[in-house]
Amino acid sequence: MFEKVLIANRGEIALRIHRACQEMGIRTVAVHSTADAQAMNVRLADETVCIGPPPARGSYLNIPAILSAATITGADAIHPGLGFLAENADFATAVEEHGFTFIGPSPEHIRLMGDKVRAKAEATRLGVPVVPGSPEAVRDIAEAERAARAIGYPILLKASAGGGGRGMKRAGDAAELARMLPLAQAEARAAFGDGSVYLERFLDRPRHIEVQLLGDGKGGVIHLGERDCSLQRSHQKLLEETPSPALDPAAREKLTGLAVAALRALGYKSAGTMEFLYQDGAFYFIEMNTRLQVEHAISEMVSGVDIVREQLRIAAGMPLAYRQSDIVLRGHAIECRINAESSEDFSPSPGRVSEYHAPGGFGVRVDSALYQGYTVPPYYDSLVAKLIVHGESRDDCVTRLRRALAEYVIGGIDTTIPLHQRLVDNPEFCAGAYDIHWIERFLARGGQ
Ligand code: MV4
Image 1 (cartoon, protein in one colour):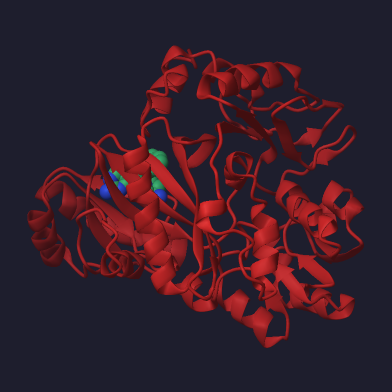
Image 2 (cartoon, rainbow, N blue to C red):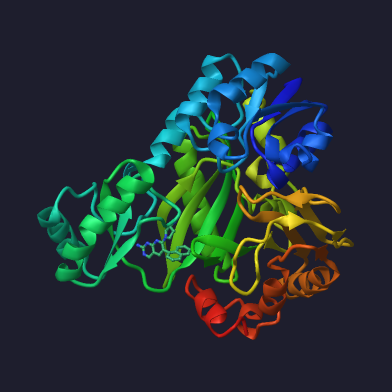
């Protein structure tokens, strides 16, 4: 096992990784920007290196600074966390070329899944159903119209280098397609430096369901069930749950079976998530994330598997600690993402945390780097805490969540806690009856 791991991230996820390392007897190196010198993950790390100024480009995205920090401290391995460099294949390659272990998938798998057109083609080859669409990026209007006619309107334009919903455009007919194609291409070029765009059949009311997977790189692959991530605003997830209220055991078995078989055929290594849209009883693969995800903790709560610990073991060349038959998915778990934002208009709310009291008790987990007196800097993602609750049934879980939200005190900044309190009191949410559009309507009527 590694003796020293450098954690190339910040905030709650850096702390989450630090905790797994500590429990495994691994020393940690925290790298941080000048804005994060007082952060809890920095305070708890065994060693710290300041790698640059507040803007991420100079610090958390600064590859030479991170590699220098690893060299100076004598780290064996680098965990990229999530966001920042986690899905940068060039970073993974550079880490290995400098003699460190990258705690994540192979650069080839990161690169493959980063190209959404190639990822879909690979999924199809591996027997995973995908949304009907153009098999390749379209070059011009004529090609786009030909593809759209074959797929059927309405269609959705997506960036090949994209993901996460940026630059998507819907077109209901050929005239709209002709207007939208150049817009989509320009947006894709601006956002990703690559203007390639492909087409998909537009699904009008899907749920977003993803499968948590772990591979050992030698064909050993297990799943930890699915997560329903349909509650998102502007492609930012608000609340996730497992299992999905929409799946019965047969559908779950089919979905997880397809995902495991695909990653086994790829020889996938480390944690990964296959994302699907689910509508009218059918699954369609859309993307794969080759990283640890924010919402990994709900899968940990129902499975009892420490996903970060498994990532560390796998990266060190050890076999998976579990066979699929060892995994029992028990009860229900929900995560509320608590952001330093107004729960009314979602405007950022950085600043000093004047009061802090986290909830606790049976079945409650809080992953957060907050503490009383800490100042949330304005430069980064607004996620400041994850409240994760486990219960025997979905109803028990929601009841416990209501109780935990009521206990949570975060003073001095605005947070999304009041929004979650309104959400868990909503009868449709309580019935699990939502798709990806439901939250927009909930927010439009003032969160009632
Ligand atoms: C779609 C779709 C409808 N039809 N693809 C948005 C994020 C990206 N990962 C995929 N996304 C979508 N792809 C087809 N063919 C609708 C969405 C979508 C969405 C998906 C998941 C969760 C929330 C969403 C909100 C709006 C649109």
